[in-house]
Amino acid sequence: MATKASLTLPMLANRLSNIRPVASTKRLSNLLRYSQPQLLRGYSTEKQQQAVSDETAAAEQKKTLSPEVERLTQELAAAKEQNSELLDKYKRALADSENMRTRLNKQINDAKIFGIQSFCKDLLEVADTLGHATQAVPKEKLNGNADLKNLYEGLTMTRAALLQVFKRHGLEPLDPINQKFDPNLHEALFQKDDATVEANTVVEVTKLGYKLHERCIRPALVGVSKC
Image (cartoon, rainbow, N blue to C red; front, top):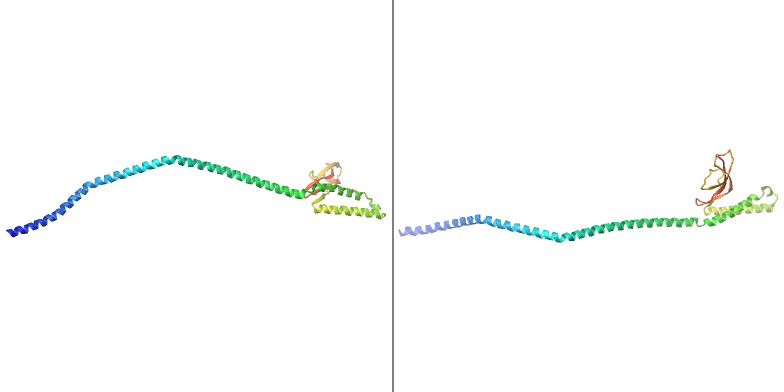
């Protein structure tokens, strides 16, 4: 009887030891099952509070930065407008300086080319005088008078040399005989009946005109045919 009892007690203890872990496991499972929603609710509430806090901080920061951002935006717009105005002024000044440089270069070139215009006009009277002198010598008396012939040849050579100097400096005579009348190059003194040419044609030249590098410095004095 004692042996049976001694065998029963260890077996009972063994069974109890097997039952306790199961009971503890079930109790822990039940505890977790009931406590998990509360833990989840607590975590969710904390997360929501953190999100609300972040939103509030962001809103406050935005309110704080909003005037600064607006001020910087206005300053940027003003700087862009000022830059545009300065760029426009710079371009205008550059164009004006380029136009002035072009005009000055043209004036310098014209001064180099036409600086002798007044001097040439004075020499034209000398050429006209030499021309009139040679025309006034009677050609029929040249062969019988050696002195007169020498004088005539000297005047002719002087006038020819003077015309060569004129040509070398760009001064050329205008002899518009039988050409159409051009008011830019000719000055009409009279009209003349001439059926052999068209109307407004130069039929007589009383004084030669002259051009200095394509610029007329003295128009030719001419007679023009009638219409």
